Image 1 (tube, rainbow, N blue to C red):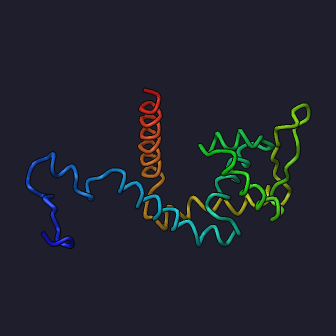
Image 2 (image 1 turned 30 degrees about the vertical axis):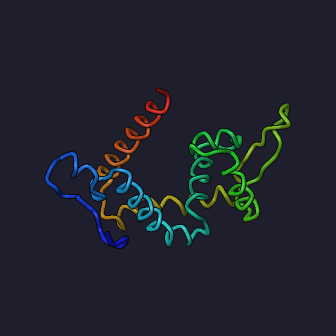
Image 3 (image 1 turned 90 degrees about the horizontal axis):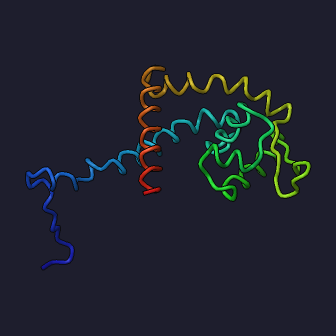
Length: 161
């Protein structure tokens, strides 16, 4: 047999065989959709001098500031070690400040600076801009969000079993 020859048997007609088609994989569709959507955000967020992960941190802080690093990492479903470099860059940009929490020297409180709080006004345009770029209505975004949250919940339950 030629090592470079294809041995694929996809499309043999059974539903079980079709389940292995790349185009039918939920994980593949989610991966490509995620990369595509984050890529669509890039030029919009560049105008604000933010990366997508930094934008997510700022969204957390625009909801509530100050917050601990642990609280931010929990809200973003990320490890604190992943969040810390983002916080350092946001602090260097003058958008946030970090300080030790009184009474708990191990915890860091993260707060918006006046510049970080002011950036929220510009960020108010992002959702509408993204809906327009993606050709989605607010209702469609809500439906997609609900579906994704359902998947997140389902995977969380599956990991606990």
